[in-house]
Picture 1 (tube, helix red, strand yellow):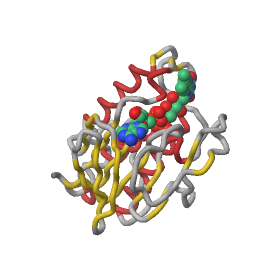
Picture 2 (cartoon, rainbow, N blue to C red):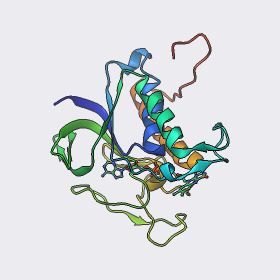
Picture 3 (tube, rainbow, N blue to C red):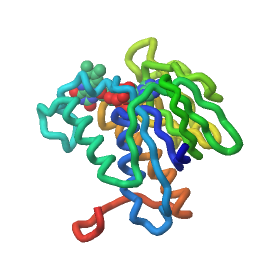
Picture 4 (cartoon, protein in one colour):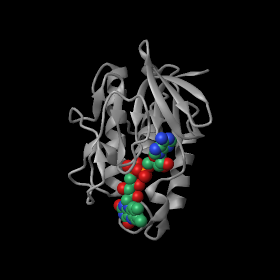
Length: 202
Ligand SMILES: Cc1cc2nc3c(=O)[nH]c(=O)nc-3n(C[C@H](O)[C@H](O)[C@H](O)COP(=O)(O)OP(=O)(O)OC[C@H]3O[C@@H](n4cnc5c(N)ncnc54)[C@H](O)[C@@H]3O)c2cc1C
């Protein structure tokens, strides 16, 4: 069982953006040999959309195609792995998270990022519970309370709309990127962000 530095549950907009942003730092000396895993069970809201107002996305692009592009962006980085599966249980064992899928696969990680969207809450063993989402647009939408930069509990972060953002692609992506930047800054030992110039390794 490989141990990951970060395990992201949910490979929709927020989770993939978080993973892409983290993995894009893999050439930094302080990144070390960290590995990231994204687990997803294929129910992103984006798959139902056709995008005309998502910044940087060619108007009329389907959500399905956008998700495929984002998955390719993630997998461009050898530090990242994407696997399909439904996470059913998590447990804190020592300082790590032990994550179990419906198929019985086990993974361990130091940091867990929940990016499961604002409609579902079906993972056992989490030390927190969702609250009603004030910007979700419908009464059954949920979010997790956090410290303002999406840190929920020791070793636990929330990304995407479960972090409390309204239902737009750019907002879900932005929360994913913010979580990534918080983790990268912790690893770098200083505030950082990831920018690539034409001459830097991609
Ligand atoms: C019909 C429709 C049209 C839309 N059109 C637009 C638009 O035009 N413009 C715009 O800006 N936004 C649009 N959106 C909104 C956009 O799709 C969302 O803002 C975005 O998908 C939210 O990202 P997220 O990461 O929070 O959740 P999602 O993208 O829904 O991702 C959550 C992921 O978590 C996975 N997951 C959940 N629980 C588990 C688990 N236990 N184990 C493993 N995986 C799990 C799901 O399978 C899913 O892939 C639209 C949404 C819908 C429904």
